[in-house]
Image (tube, rainbow, N blue to C red):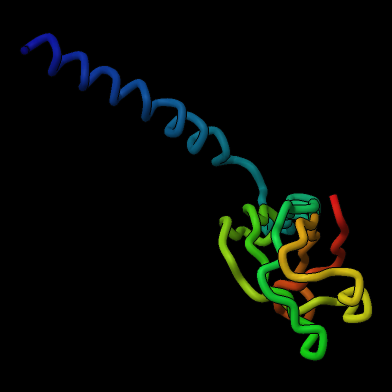
Length: 118
């Protein structure tokens, strides 16, 4: 038991050492004018997501999809209604269709920017 406790203390100290070393090594650096916001390139690009059309409302320009995770929007798999950027494209689809939908934020809202058959 005494050895296990000593081992835990040593491992904790070793785990903290790199962080302490890194923090101490930046002390003499001038950080003025350094950009601290994440770069635009760090955001994930939109990718097609497999989905099934559960409900289609062409008049309102909305589609309810049962979809997989949407990485670029940080959304997990769920069923949700989305506005469609191109309402005219809805005439090519019906409820129950399997689609590949690409999502992005338009006017602050998650929006389907492209939808096609797989």
